[in-house]
Amino acid sequence: MDVGASLFLLGSSAVAVWFIFVRRVTGGPTKFQRRKTGKADPAAGYGLKPAKLPPVTGFPLKILTTLINSVFGTKILIPHAYKTSNGNLLRKIVIPEDPTMYPIMPFDGPSMPLGSKSSTDLTDLTRPRTKAQDDFHHWEVADFIQAYTSETMTPTEVAERAIKAIQDSERSKPPLRAIVQYDVAEIRKMAAASTERYRKNAPLSPLDGVPVCIKEELAVVPYYHRSGTDCLGCDTPASVDSTVAAKLREAGAVILGTANMHELGMGVTGCNPNKLHGTAKNPYNPQYFTGGSSSGSASAVGAGICPIAIGTDAGGSIRIPAALCGVVGLKGTFGRVSDHGGKLPDTPCECASILHVGPIAASVRDAAIAFALTAGPDPKYPHGLNQPIIDFENLDNTNLTGIRVGVDWRYLRHSSNCIVAACEKAIEHLERCGADIVDVQIPELEEARIAHTCIVITEMATALAESFSTMYNKLTLPTRGLLAMRETIPAYDYIQAMKQRTRTMNFLKEIFNKVDVIITPGTGALAPRTSLGALTYGRTPDTQDSAIMRFMFLGNLAGIPGITVPIGYSSSNNLPMSLQVQAGWWQESVMLRVAHAVERGTKHAKPQVHFSLLG
Image (cartoon, rainbow, N blue to C red):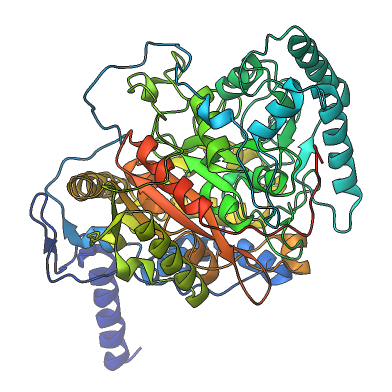
């Protein structure tokens, strides 16, 4: 070897040693942004970035999932995608606030006694109301009560119609796939007991005899607790009800079965290619997705199979499918409704600090009734042990004089043109009802979005680590890809996200000192169209998915209540559009009152797939 070659080899070796063993790669020079406690940068501007994610489905999704879960994927592909989607934003910020692990807000006034049932007077909400002859409406709880008390129909007769509706929905082309587990004998048994109570004039509650269904994520006897999978919770049926199922059973509701969902709740479309489930279809147009993850719950209510269904919401999973299926979705303050029985056996809660349980309903009144009868402190659920008394007095009053409605116009107009136009029309209606429209600006929306994403992925991946390891080949392709992202998010990001939660909660607290509610669109885009590739293999989250959940993350990150309510239909394909109303912590009453006023100003259209249980 000549001298030149020796020198080159020596030099190359020295450079390699320097790069591998000497060069600093941890915490390299970065321009950090310093934040002041409780103060947003007035020059920051709007800031919320639209995601640019290509749609991947069909066989290419199988290739992508394999790559993501390889060394190349976990070390190069996922970190690059996380960075380009602004996922490392919080790493460049010095946040002085302490982290908030759970978004629980103190309150003034008396607390509900532990384990108590709601004492809220629901009389006004169960009186039938006059409806325009030319306006379609879903049958509501008040209609069922009137039928039962007038002896026009019995719970048993309604239950038989509901059973036939489920069976007919499965024979339709394509199958609706709203309710994926039901037991005819169980339904008839509950309905017969309710019929006897009405015969004796002794109903248990306004929901006695009313058909309901419950998302498969929540344990319901005697059904399998599968959470949308083909591999988890499939061995033994549930032997103990979740708290929300137990409360509905105690109220005399007729539980029709468990509703379909996006696998493990990990998606906003409701697309589930599992053989035991299939994808729930949108009753307004079965060629479009329902939204997720509580897809079957929204589909069942939208199709008229039941007026109330229960869902869960960690990133819009109640409000999104309700919005896309033309019905009402309510997520209360964090902790209001117990999530006990919501996790899979022997696993932690998937998203403990952001998950909410709540109703999807035919109307705002029905959502309020279901919420009142399922909310309240539960000894088995620590996050909701201390909560104020629920009061829905005045909910039916559509005179909103003195109610301050906040609108961040930059945020609201970050939507499809048809949705913006429908929201503006709804806001004009609120003004005619007497509401004061107040301009607000919600600070650090992009930071809040990233914080929410980080918390969702970290908590879910942690809870499902064992399942991901042992059941990898049995999970759907999109779920494998999303769970692989846990390799990218360090504990540093998670703590930063919790600190951003503190800031976001404080910002919202200041805003709710100035307004009673905040108005946004329900979703930033219409329901996506299904495709053969997606129905067969699943689909990755894409740009449209990002728009669909654009207005959801604040409610989960900060724990404030929110409700989506229909406001019209697109002119091109008659797909539902929705408005979201959010209020301060524990202020569900004013939120529902505003949502009810919006609802009364909207003309409703009949879905393509619809079953009438009373007509």
